[in-house]
Length: 165
Image (cartoon, rainbow, N blue to C red):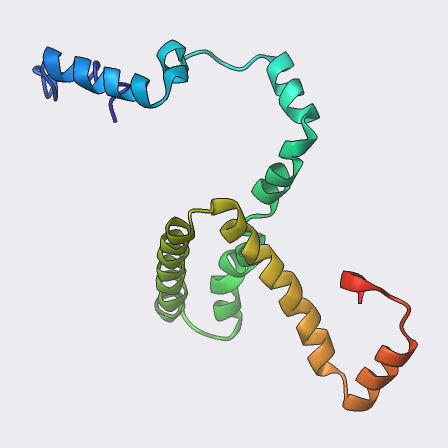
């Protein structure tokens, strides 16, 4: 992808994508939409001080946590799926064939999540929903494994409040 509308020339496209006049129109349009982009030069690296300033900004901590936790529930399954199939006695070809539906399902899910995040125009909430769903699913598994008597006993004797319950 070109760095900017003014830098589209390359060895395989010596004329570039736009004429000089079109380049001026595009650049002026971008600057008119967001004047801060006029002084933007993003080819410089980050200094240690800038990284420290970002780390101290507590408003960014939820995004850092989201970046660390995003996709966490699916990674163990992805890593050990073929080993699990081999352990069940399938040969290499059968193992590879059995892993295809999981991969196709992952691709379809990724496309659906991307489309939904574009629809609601909120990437953070959609990304966070995966981790929240996984956590609630784990709690539901424990709850559903209890008998009705155990559930009643838990409700009457627990001192946990809110999401600790």
